[in-house]
Image (cartoon, rainbow over all chains, first blue to last red; front, side, top):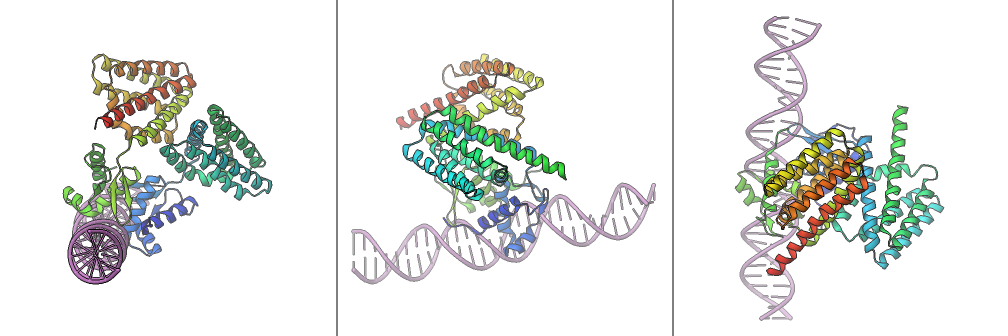
Length: 217
Length: 217
DNA sequence: AGTAGAGTTCTTGTATACAATTCCACAGAT
DNA sequence: ATCTGTGGAATTGTATACAAGAACTCTACT
């Protein structure tokens, strides 16, 4: 399945929006972007549709599309939903996970541990993603995997920040151990509880960070 | 916010797909549809993007878009997620719902009761939607409301079928009463449990119906 | 000076023209 | 008879041309 031109453009624009290259409410100029990417307006407009459905921009008819940067309130909402989704995944995974997946999970967790011991936040970040992906997939519910992964991806840039809190890596690691234990024991409620906490604390840390930096301005 | 031509076309196509006017895997012919709607290919292609992101069709590059009818397995997955989302809404709503919203909820519930007593499944269906919408909104989490509403809408055609089971209306009604009671008491866990069951049973009934009708073919 | 209004300019939405790739049929070879 | 390859037809993807609506400016009037 090859990519279309419009796909690459959509990805590029998404990256630019997420990295804050555009301010909130800024209008995306079709002609300017078309020149920038060396294409006509058509692929640009197609890419816009993608961004609209991803919630990264808003379209006002006959006005144009405007970037929509997430407000602290929206982020809090999304982290709240993320925590619930992770909890659901944990509950379902506990009763459906296969031995082979449990093995993969333990491996991923050990990789995380090594990254923590090395103090490598970036590596931990990557290994942490595979850890959670394994749990998602263990739910045997493709729709849930898709929903959860999409939100996970959207929150990625904000999740990253809070890993820099002092001691957060170690705390996160011990939560991981509790998650693995709950899944091994087939204890869905426990897995749900720990995973919920695991994500909710990220949202809280992030929110704290936001209010501090806002207050500083 | 006026509608574009492409918006109306997307809605029309969505309706046609949902009502089974197109078979699973059927290719949507841009030119034929353009003629049918009396427009050029451009708005059709724009509408396609909408359908793609809604998961109603799949795009294979340089091949076209193909309708994706939900399989029983996918529906089961979606009902499972729907049950969880409703449970979350219930849990959050229990601690956040305002008195005015509780009052609206009781009103909506009484309307449901009247519809049941009148044996009017269609009216019940509508009143049931407002009942659930009130709960969604009581979560004070716009992102959750959006997510839940979208899935609710997608499952609408399938939800409707199972209301025709004998005694389902009355059972559904007594579940509603339990939900209202839990929310009045501020008991989040109870509300979550009842709502989860309320939706899960719909999925089961629907699934039973599907396997029966499949076996009959 | 400020505001309302008309005309111009700019931008979006749609149609059409063109390019590039895939599909299909038919012919020839093994 | 089946398979492979080539050529044409059809279809998607992209560019450009055109239409319609929004924003802006400049003027005239209170």
